[in-house]
Length: 108
Image (cartoon, rainbow, N blue to C red):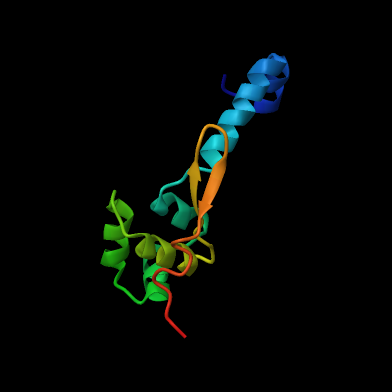
């Protein structure tokens, strides 16, 4: 397949295969672990550590954790300029969980 453009290969695919490929692309684009997200935001561990006021090693450890407090994830996301939204998905609908909206934020 060397030398062939993906667009040319895509044109030969059935509409169903194109739709499946697009669906998989959207799924992969919307699923990232924290390290992938940091890299996608063009941040180094060191620069994120400075934003979080922690060491680079702390960022490395956070990125490797499989279990983390929601407040920690929120700080990580907000330091990158994002907003953490917790959603529960059910077969018939999705619910945004608001209980965590202000968790970990300083009180006025």
